[in-house]
Every structure is written in structure tokens, then in C-alpha cells.
Length: 453
Image 1 (cartoon, rainbow, N blue to C red):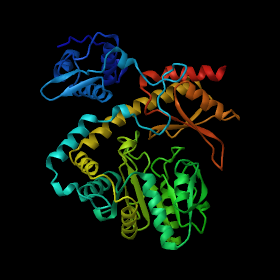
Image 2 (cartoon, helix red, strand yellow):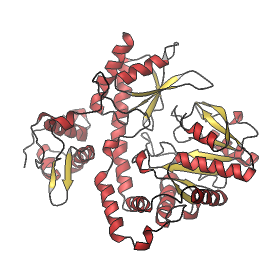
Image 3 (cartoon, helix red, strand yellow):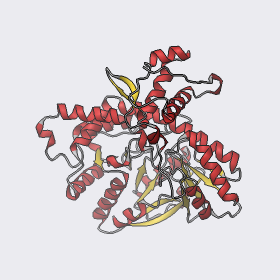
Image 4 (spheres, rainbow, N blue to C red):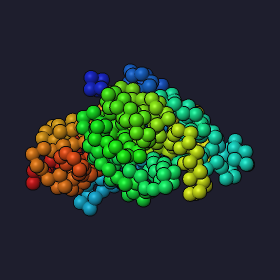
């Protein structure tokens, strides 16, 4: 068993992060080689004079990164692939600078809870009856719909029964299917209001589904309800954490939006974007819980776990849920049942909640580091939307070249995109979820240097 020599500064705070950094550096330097067994969390905590929970958090972080491997009965060891080259290796651009992902909204896939997910899959394979592997309900297996209805009610204050929940591949498919059902019901293309600015990636999918897109401005309180077109059949909103500005829909606007939907008969399509990652308080309750007969709530595990799982859901009024379930059956017969059962068990066992708690702590550290570095090295950038989510929204002012700033940010290894709203000034989105806290200052200094040149 290795005798760890860790330097921890209690006055500096972030004790778990300090322990993780020290162990990571020991592996990087070769002082801890693959297969080396680390002290038990209780023993290390006693040696350092810290609580065991701090050490557990540090170990969990390193296990998630793949630096350590923890198995029942075998203790915690340096992972087989975590030698000097593996720990130092990171994606890089052509100039050799580390690169931390192309989409500012992407989660850190290196922190996917592989062991917990594997345990869920193993449980499912060991306990599922043979008939469960047949074609399932195209709306989702009952076990997952029950877990999602309970979870959304508990965490998001939603008002939905399992019959109101339809499992889809993600928010994009969920919204597209709702639009398709509205088009079929009305016998024509629909008028769909969207926030401005918004995610450009969803627009082609919604247009293909039959929507005529109308942008509606967003201000400091969220979507401007008074600007909604009177003939809109539906509106797509991100009230928990507007993309890209990060604004939370104010209580007054929430009430106004629900009132507008009741008067016009339109549907509100609520993209529950970034709702899991609130840093300053508990997550804001969803709109669907206030008006379940007028709001369709769409969510997924793409930000919480990984986009590649392709697991999402909608919670909709019964008539909409039935129509979407029918459309899903006509489209592709539903999602893979093994993955659905695995997610159901993952939620039921508490692993989903534990993972989200851990990721909130980590993403908050990265957010704080990025916001602080930008304030120090690029003080003319005004940062918004940092109370939640995986990205921040930056305004430059002074007519600066946003496209040039995005190119410089990417060259520095940051994940950045330009935002060009129909109403208001341009800005840019910078993601921090894949940016390790200890790499932030280096990346922002490189960006500042490029901008000065």
C-alpha cells in the first residue's frame, strides 16, 4: 500500500479538490504507478486530520476520471491505464494546446459514472424476465416511465403520471414529435415561436417537422410574452436556464406565459435545459407543474450523464402523450429496452441523484475558475448566466469582433460559439464542463494573449 505524501492547505478551501490534484500529480509524475493500492479513505482522512467525506469525494472524482479504480474487496488502486502518458494526454489542436470539446453545452464525458452504470446494466441482465427483451411499448417501458414520473414530481415539481410520460431519444426528438403531431392534428404547418437567441441546432429539426419558426426576443426576465405572435400554435422555451443567455424566466413572465397559452389555446413546449445544474439555490420548479394541461415538459440525460445514451422523455397532456406515443411507434418502435431498464434501476437505486450531486460540485468549481480568470485577464468581457448550467454567456461591448474572439478562444483550447440574435447585440458562449479547473488559467491566459496580438 502506498504511503501518500499530500500537501493540503486547510485555509485555501476546496480540500477534496486539493487531495484529487495531489494524487493526480503523483500519478502523472510516476510516483504512483498503475496497480498501486491507495490507503483506505478512513485511514487517509485520519492521517490528514480531515473528515472521511472529503477523502471519499476526492477518490470518487479520480475514479470518475479513470485515474483510480475502486472495487469491492480490492480497495482503491491506480487504474491500469493511468500512467504518466495517459494522465498527461488530452485532446489537442494542431498547435499542441489542450482542447476541451467542441460544443460548449457538452458535459464532461470523462466523468460518466461507468461503475454505477455497469452495476445497473448487470442488475438488469440478471433480473429481467425473457419477455422483457421483446418489442416494448413504443412510449417507453413501464418501469422507466414510473421512475421518471416520480423523479420529475420530486425534483422538478412536475404533475405527471406514468401514462403522461413518453420515452424518446432526447429533447430534440421529443419536440420534433410534438410538432409533427400538431401538424397532423391541424392538417397544416404550424407557427412555432422560439426564443431569440436560441440553439441553432434545433431549428432545422423543427422546420423539418413542419414548423414555421418565429423568433421572439429574450430580455433579463426571459422570453418577452407580449411579443409572442397571436397566431402561434406553440412556443419553445428554456425557462430554468435559457440557452444561451442563462436567464431564468421570472415569476411574472411564467404567469404571463401560462395565461397566454390559456387564452390562445397554444402549447408551451418546455425544454428543461440545464435544470439539474443549479449552483446558487435549489432548481426552479418547471412550468409543467403549474399548467399540466397546456405545457409539454421535455428532458433528457444528455447533460446529466452523456448524449450518446440517447435517452430522454416528455411529460405531456394525455392527448399529446397518446399522439406522440403513436408517432414513436410509427417512426422506430421505441428506444432500446435494456438501456431503459438500466436507467430505471439507476434512478431507483439513488445513483442518479448521487451522480448529480457530485457533478454540481465539480461544475461549480470549474465555473468559478473560468469566471474568475475571465474577470482577471479579460475584464472587458461581461459574463452572464453563471448561476446554473454548463456554459457562460459573454458580451464584449464596444463593437469587438465576436467571430475573431471565438477563433481565439478555440485556438486557446476553449469550447466557444458565437451567438447572433435577431434582436440585440452579438455575444459568445463558452463552455466549462469539460475544462478541468487546474487548466482554466492557462487557457484564459492564452486567449488573452491571442486577443492582445
